[in-house]
Length: 580
Ligand code: PEP
Ligand code: MG
Picture 1 (cartoon, rainbow, N blue to C red):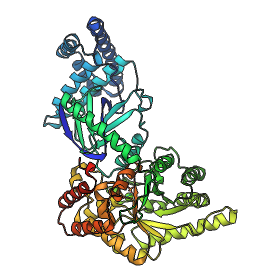
Picture 2 (picture 1 turned 180 degrees about the vertical axis):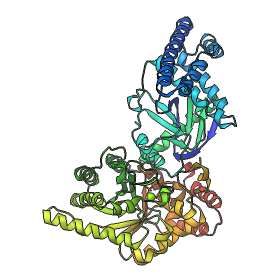
Picture 3 (picture 1 turned 45 degrees about the vertical axis):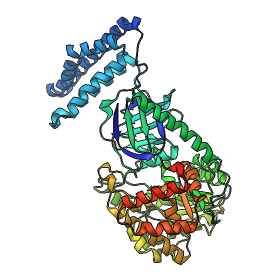
Picture 4 (picture 1 turned 135 degrees about the horizontal axis):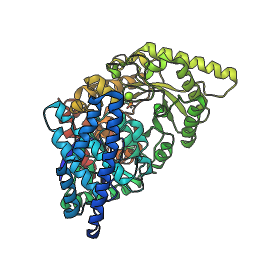
């Protein structure tokens, strides 16, 4: 048994067989073979070694002819490793003595070799680990007779383990078959993490190198609450986690019972609990969970993974579907927020050194007005179908806001000329995601209908911490006193100006912060659909006076650690089940 510590990004516990997704995603079909079959299985292994050897020879010859002997030597080295008698002996022993399937034996042995090389200090030797992974892959490909085991074609549930997963790969995961996932790199605020939460898949990212320690088919536990990956757990650990899973099921049932009850404090303050969504189909899930509206629809997910830019029609279909599904409840749609970790629309020109400080979000839209107009037109048309509101992301200067509003007014005129219906007084708001916006908020508030605090970015820009960099993940804290002060300033300014303020960053999806945020004055929270039940549970257990006392205390504290500890204790007092 081995426990890896990563970053918890999507809560929940998953127990299951590992599927290692290394862009070829091989699945080990069986781990063990029956005693009678070992001779045949060893023969199968030999056929695979022979087949792969032939392939490598052909590659070596072709590459040598095309590029010269030094490149051909790469395959010659693979060939030598493949035919190493020691390797063959080890594989045979595992099949004969432990009844491992050839696939499982290949994966175990070659990954162990790879691990030894990975740990060597010399870079050039450490890189040789890759050779072992390559040989493993070739043998598995031959043994399983499959070219690729696409994630899409899964038929049994697995735990996905990968070096990294892009947001669009994550988005394509099928909740039915992916019980949980873990990656070696990545940070808490990246979009892979957000999508995982949206899909309600327990996930851990940024756990460091662990793929060499695990083979496809091994039993693995993902603890999405504590950011742990447990490889080959012992029986006691499995039993403990199975109890945890059962406990969660009954907690989920109890939370589901709150669905039709209002998010109201004990002193009858009604809180609007909205949902954050990435895809139109999630609107139905949000409603099922009892959402009062959509507080953030991340429209850029429409661009992800698409080969061409979405057309006006594609935009309108998506927005219209959400607006209709939500039946006149508010639907806040954020305009394109592509940036650093959101792929699909690379900024033209050279690669950016600091993409998070580069051409992203509203800057990218304003730089591409024709693209922006297509989206604004669809948003306006969707406003005829429900209570649609427009939100601009990462606005840092008044000039950006004014330019965006001018473009919007322009598009309104076009629509009028075309005789298409839309709501002229459609509410227009901004996300508060940078300290600059907080400092200038009194000015912004004169020109917007609402604001929404985007803590995911506000934390990174306030604390100078890349939200998806695991090396500085410990500094990325919603509860950092500097962040709390910025949030407090934002809410106070909005209340003073009588402009509606909400929060849609991940922070408010964590029930640990619910009391703090209510105490600071927030009455509109937008959270992932999966978090609605738990946040509502806390809201219904507290009074505003209690929350205000808590937020006053928290604001006096010196460190994120102190704040978190205090808030965790306080939430446990009102909802003891949250004290896992
Ligand atoms: C945020 O920054 O808090 C936010 C909600 O936007 P995103 O996570 O999509 O950047
Ligand atoms: Mg953001």
